[in-house]
Length: 222
Image 1 (tube, helix red, strand yellow):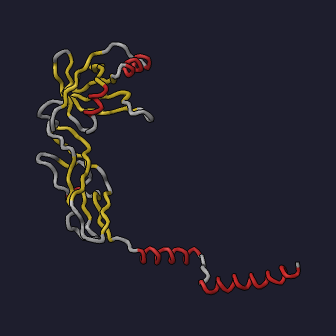
Image 2: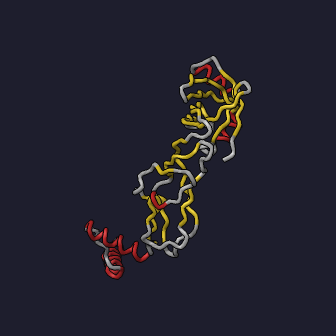
Image 3: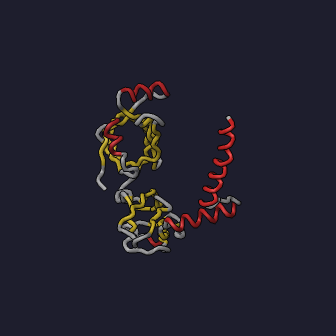
């Protein structure tokens, strides 16, 4: 993964008013901590930071007063309405150490015809080197038949990665595609169990004709 460099500035003003002022200047308030160091309150460039955080596990190089520090975004607070980041918690990392991250599952390939592929869990928790965090983990379903289930323990992990997710957790489930006939049969069975009855088409037509016949004499009398 390519390192992403963000030039930061230290800040000494805090509180909601100061945070609003920072965001009006198209910057993002953040705090960086970890490895026993004192928290450092900083501001980050808004546009560049939002681009960098499109990948939630992006390894960032934070430059403060000419000094570089590797960091991961631990918590990103976003505005519920506007596409704005309100605050970021960054955790300091060092080359050579391993970190726990949630990595997106990416399904590739086509399963057998007339099957449905369902991703039951969208991410896997892995322990990986801080400088080698994968963007995703690929799970191939090429040619797999209905009834196939892929658990966490079946997923091929990147070199050096350790699985933290429960090995028995279901990741991908492949089932048979339901036909229109099967859907109608299931609906009929459900209606039968619920006591819902439908008149036959011919019976419904006879009822309609009978009703018209009864209404005709009344109309003539008028």
